[in-house]
Image 1 (tube, helix red, strand yellow):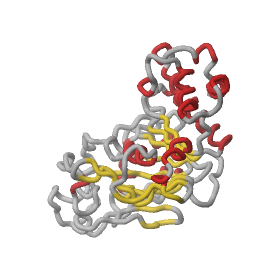
Image 2 (cartoon, one colour):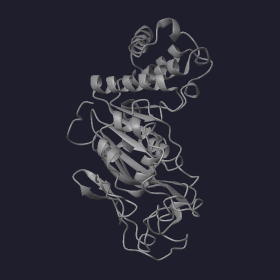
Image 3 (cartoon, one colour):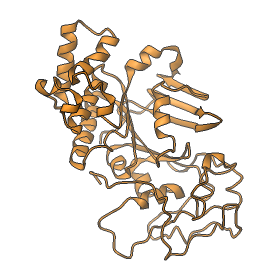
Length: 360
């Protein structure tokens, strides 16, 4: 992993919110991408990761906050935003026109932005496809005639053919098998090193994020609850949700007696954190106090470069037991008792859907 460039962000969403209907899907989110940096955004399904990605692409309007490109409002130059920031989506086949060849789809951005003659566009598209491992023969095929891995490689070529400076990758490997996942991740790492791309990498897989990314932001119910160096968040998560998310990922080397360090409170599975007046994780958090149900914690530095939005962050230092290191509480809240579950109880059925990382 190469070191990201220091300095100002190339693309940044500042205190951004996105509203659908009567409420915010994403609330007061700030994420910046510097040249040569890969930032991982993790969280369960429905937490707002893809909405954040669409907002940073300029595809959905912000209800509050601002999107900045090179420090200036992106709303003033949409054309520059669309050529500078490109996307790779989760389902590679669905992101292509089924009636057109892969080559024609990769040429399309060059046509839209009037880059070169037809011959030059074809040459540049073939060169980009060759760089990601797609031959001219395969490039002439339609999406249904190639594998998922080949289709995703073509999607990367389409995203990079304009020589963008930022890539927004919305779960680009979740639909691929493990061996192809590793190849695509290696390709993204190579592109970052060669072109100093700034990348937002959205994933459910904490192992992939820890291996590929420089920084990690953890999202729950539309808010960033923890942010820091990827290895630090992976090895020493400090927000209770981050810790539960980490422990929910299966690991083959765990002993039969292993127990998760924290468990989600039962009986509040259907509570939408976006509707709560206080901490959005309070209804599910085994460490929640009455104060958590009223006060909304802000992201604050708990260590150098490590931010946590929690009134009672977890101590995950070696030798500590997060379940025993409880805040001073004993009062039940509206969603039920706020004491940890017994050690022999089974985890809630709402454990986030995570799969084993190809690089973990």
